[in-house]
Length: 283
Image (cartoon, rainbow, N blue to C red):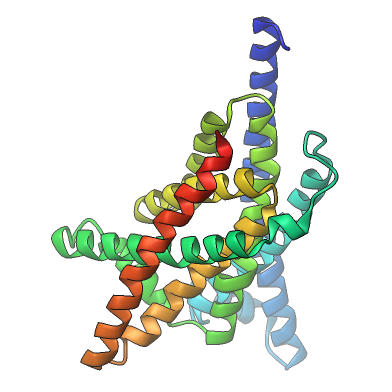
């Protein structure tokens, strides 16, 4: 047991480490931006382009596809962050070295995390749609961001949104960051801290709010199952469901929307049940 003074010092130390990690993630975005700009210019020069013109296109004139450039920067930043935080995660010493993956990925757990991922996505999407309809001005920036995101290259968009982004974010927030705050704080306080940083990371109040809610759920999953792989799968399912909804509902067929609504209500209900099921192991 720590004394009050030692516990206070430990908490200060761990919060400093967490903030340094968070700052390092932002720095990774700057490195990713520089790498993508240099890559674009180098590729253009290999095909006979002028250095000054190419540099101006990607940084000043905005003549390149801004959405694809943003996606590329995000993907490179996510990969760099995953590598760095992966090393930090491996170095964490408080977790049990032996994990029974047969138990972690039991049928009940797998069904829970899949239903939680899809159910949470549907519920949060519904709430955001409702709020957007009631307060259109407040969500104007978010709506524009999402429409720009959907205009990017489909393969690049899916690769980042459904795989690279979720895996990297889990390693950062439910891995390196959560590991450190959980050594100094009780679970729920640690979960709130990592979720708050996860929300701030999105740099958008709307995305930040639902990222905070999602982060809380993902923290519960990591603690309940004992494996960050489960939160990665849940996060991938969450983002994949979001993309799938936009495709299916975009067909405009009434009967399709009715079927989707029935399935959505079922997934929301099972997702809530799944969270309650996993929370039993926290007590």
